[in-house]
Length: 384
Picture (cartoon, rainbow, N blue to C red):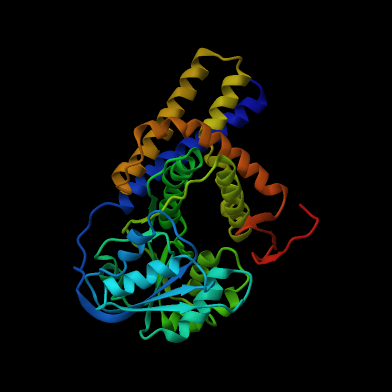
């Protein structure tokens, strides 16, 4: 074998090591462990729900926050557009849950390029309590979610907690690939980071933080033009010396019916954002592409029988990691047939990793931006 084949073999060895490490970290992170039982009453919690538009599961997702086994808490729904169709559903929910302390707030001001942060800044003055929860509109949680969050803050020094998530029902090719990416790549990488380098970021589906921690980083205004607001929030709070934690409590996101091109655009946006936020970690992410390296060895050896075996073993290992993450850890119900897309997803992931280095342009919310080296959004220019 030539020197190049030996190099790729070394990369494959590192990639295999990462797959096993991810399995160990996932098992350890999601392992049941005794903890202080959550209580139904405790410090007051304000839940922020920035919303835009309706989705098939919007009612189910929003209702899950109105039926919590915890008190006291308030829910603030923030909507930018006074003609948004979600407002009719919110009025209906207000009537259906009269005992729930909820408010619907129109947030028309444009306070930066990140619309989520803009809405949150307009909701913040209405927050009644000092424990703050930020949850995307497409997230569904269990009735014990707020109780679990409150319990996490009993530990001194905790400034922010967030939760891993699984993708909800997937019906299109893009949605299936998105769900596979979450379960086979993203959640394992979070588990590895948790034990190898420590958590200095947040997962944006749901985040809980104290008002004091938010004040310590200057509030939400400094995040107005950042795309990865969840990363920035966790990173800045960690810099103050407060602890940032990820709870082994899984929430579910409403997986939109993505087309194949929608999936590629979303993943490229995520890849370029991740590359800017964590350049060293993102570069190291390149060694995780085990299937690509095994196929490269297969081609370089002229389809040698042993190389076929190596590629098959790699695919089995990748399938085991994805299946363990989805079924055992996330308790998801991704159809078994969907795992047949894993080779396609892995090849696309490698291509997207390479493409992320070719520019800083991202598409988000129907607009085109450039991500600066600091992670800020900037108006689109003619550069790639």
